[in-house]
Amino acid sequence: MRKRHAAQEARRAREFEAFVAGAGGRLLHTATLLTAEASDANPRARRLLTLALAHTYACWDRLHGEDPYDRAREYLATRFARGAWHRYGGLAPYLYLPLPLPLGRAHARVRPVGPLARLGHQERLILVLRLYEGVAEEQVAALLGLPTERVRTVCDRATATLLHPPRGPAPARVRPKAATS
Image 1 (cartoon, one colour):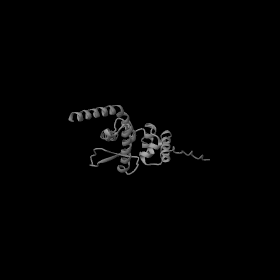
Image 2: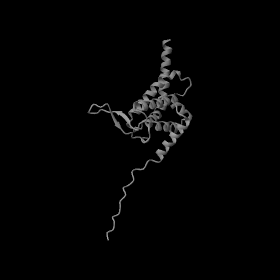
Image 3: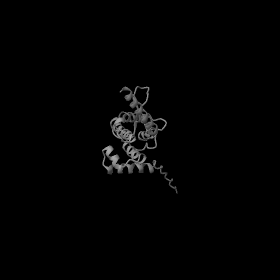
Image 4: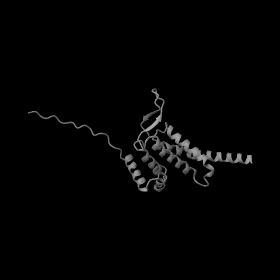
């Protein structure tokens, strides 16, 4: 009995390692896009990925033919959405990252720097799931508890924001000097 259990655990570990080797990079990139962090400095994305992989490993034996990538991506998205709502007071455009500060403050406000930094959390989440991950509108709507039309509208608005960034301030108008006669 003990040998059989050890063999099952070893098989489970090998299967999960193979899954992580194949899907870990893509899931990390997805998490990095969601958090709008730089790809070389992404502690929140790595934490999201670690939590998603831990959850997937815990559920590994109960997947019963279900795609583990879908399960990990779903957990990653829902964890990001809940974290954005609860931790940051809604879908705010800023991220709070823990940084050591001399004044003893626990968190510092920093702007996101990734390619999707101009988008809000919900826009980023829907855009990444729809365009990068290729998840259908209906599935995204069901995952986030939103109407399908809302998902479509948010995705269209986010795409337009990325394709047509807002212009900077208009240049100051210079008035010509009045001619004196």
